[in-house]
Picture 1 (cartoon, rainbow, N blue to C red):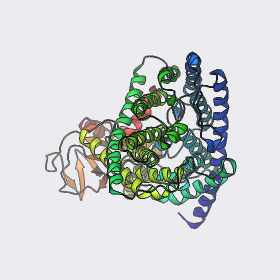
Picture 2: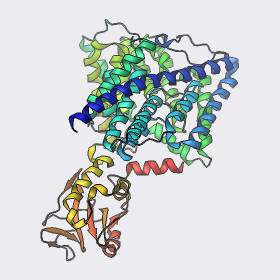
Picture 3: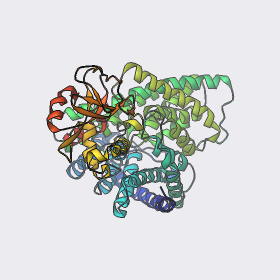
Picture 4: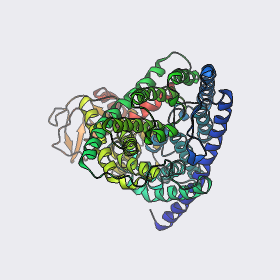
Length: 576
């Protein structure tokens, strides 16, 4: 990237920071509006709010208004579902995943209609009592603004992807008052195995800091939660109990994604139109709220109560289970809302429970529990430690928080791998690392093809990105000049080099009369050389005449085990 483009992107980041801050305020306006009228209909029953953003920690529960509470939540889910599935199905669920999938799979392209729909649908879902957070809506809204801005500017796919990340960081920073943590979150959430989109960090940091400063003029700069600034961990006993918190948080970090996506799969299997499924999920939330009204809304208020040690110990485990299911019913059914706040809720209540059990500080354990559960469940340990520290102002707890979160994260990763669980993270669109990201592999694929430009009789840069994506994900051949095709597939069986049909000509490896241009093994591209045996699972890039390609396709799996994950997710969304 040249210096001029770099300066332009820095200015773009500042602009998106300002827009992200205003966008967050627009969302909060609609959310507060829906909450106000919902409270009128339910005679005040609903979630309390944080004093720092104009709310009260006092919750009014009118027990003879249970029917109205359920009716309002179901109505919100119904209208939200109809809006989303009629106009923009990709706006369903917890929008951060949509932004992550757009980064990896569509070059950062997010349809323009998604942005306003996400704001309205999320305000209806959360404002009427849905157990979801503000993170998803603001992330997708701001990321969508970044995508639209890049499209208007006719930016390259690379620049659009970067601006999507900047927009995401800006929106989150404005909502959570965490400029540094959200900047790191935007580049860490893309991957599940401790890899970052490091080249974007300067821009996401600039955008998030600007958004934080601008939003401060509307809601102040004080941390989201109130804790004593004198909190400190100094004795070995407390550290020992924090390690226990880390272990338990790691286990919760395994359970949470599998409950969340298990309920999602259950809703997908229901033989009814997706437009009405969020209403069914909302009904489940309403029924849970009859016994546990604490599950309503995002739960920031109850997080503060847990940090203050105001909830009796015997109630905490029951509320944790109730919130996990209420949150899953809300978002997994197709309702619009984020997963961040509910995860913080679970972590805060878990930490408060262990603090009361071990006679420790509820504030310390609730704060660190928030970071540990979300950091493990979402596989974003570094960002989460900093975000929670900024949201509470508990900077003196940074070291013990980091220790606990890393323990929870490492345990979660190890156990998920050991038991080969289906759902590894709250963010399904995460890929393990850059080698599994289609967008990065498309760039790599163009570089490989450029080596063969004379043979292709075609400049690889002119091959359509969508065609390359279909080639990688679904083994759909690409026609090239000279009557040949490019094919990519995963070998079903081992294929020793010295098989009768395998030979080398002029240092080029052949596979049954098709030229092996490159092979993908163990996360990296390998240049095919004579003497390399082909193994089951190797993914080969082949060139040959259509007759040869048709003949050998039976030897390959048509869906790439490396690159098909996001494509299959998108197919399920399109079919739901």
